[in-house]
Image 1 (cartoon, rainbow, N blue to C red):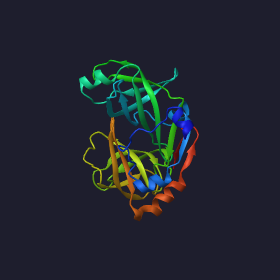
Image 2: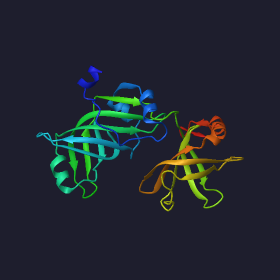
Image 3: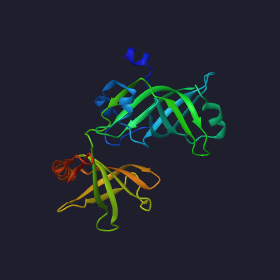
Image 4: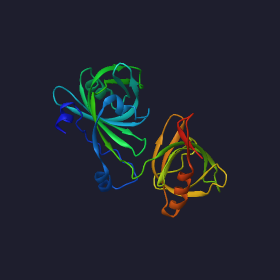
Length: 254
């Protein structure tokens, strides 16, 4: 751990992030910390994933904020969306050379938190859509196992509430315990805690019930994280066991 801290991967506060699939105690027991090269760590982070970070000024003032990860540049840089802060805060804190401590979220597999230190290299002004560019850290601390079970990346069409509203959706990942679905921006009536029914568009595919554990909006759709009801465990396990890996798209299909 001493080597990790020397390389600048100290953990910032990250209480904003929760997977919704295990208790805080269970996650603490499951987490395994590993030192991972920055490039390898961020290869596991999808664009538009959540990121929380603290920015410090030379006088010791600190701003805590969160926004979205955009991507990685070949010149050892990371691109981050500017957060929602006041113009005064942006002018004070988002300066070249200011250090940040950050936590990024990887949703792949069992999920992971990626902790790292960096500094602001550039701020590209584009009105409300400014981009913050920070240096790619040489080392990160990665805590695995955000979920109790790994999610498999899939590309399956489905129907949300098949007996009533019949919202078309796409299932993006799945495990025996839950899945992520994306639906049209018009399907905005669901909230965290709502019970839903879901059917995969496949031959003899049963209807499964679940609870919405998290909800996020993108430019084109809503993302819902769903935890399956215990009564559907046998059905969800059967679905996962039927999946086959498609080499052409690097995802699982039925």
